[in-house]
Image (tube, rainbow, N blue to C red; front, side):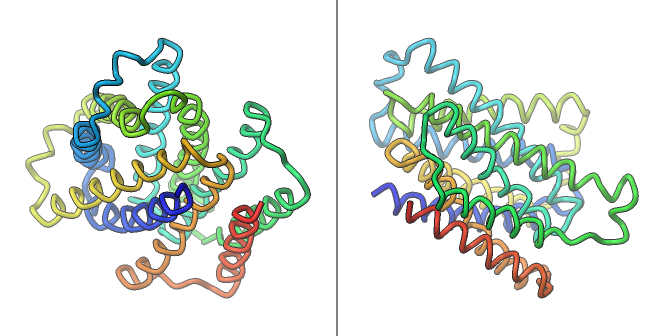
Length: 286
């Protein structure tokens, strides 16, 4: 069952990135992230009440709550950095870097959970690393300070995403995954709005047009669905396998990036994509 949830997580995550890219447009990415996080929050708590998971809130230990809050902070940081990178960079370059969190997550999974790293997993890591490297093609604009900003934000997003997974794995233990997701989302929401307020961008909310609002809301719904599926899979599956399958959202994102934004893959990037898919497939077979 965890495999089905992991695949659904990848599908929704891929769609979410495209919807968010369209919705953000020329607007402040931090403000848009705060808006879409609000949608995810509503979605998450609705699921909590539908499943009856709210009754378990009194049973959450202080340790579990701490890890959930840390996971939520990292989630907020990952979303803020990711959508900032999307707003200034090409999807086909930003997304692969974000997916590099798989490698760090596997290392941390080995250290913290004792999850084995055998020959097959090492092979998968090499393939993933090589694929990511090939997909990140340099452009003349990357030699400038402003041109490298998307890379810094994408890398920060990957680090936060990895920490989110690790803290989430620790926090999910012993509680309903829907309730865990809702608590994480609440924490991420506070962080997102706090950042929007600190940069003085909240007043710009009235300038966002209706079309952008629609895409931001749809992105939030897709993210909420992805997150719920992801953490339900994480609660029952092996961390490294769940994370790897989730990264298949790259296929969905790249496909829609071509259709919507006409972003094409070069031969080098296409080879990189194949290597990443192969590495992901190996991860699911371990």
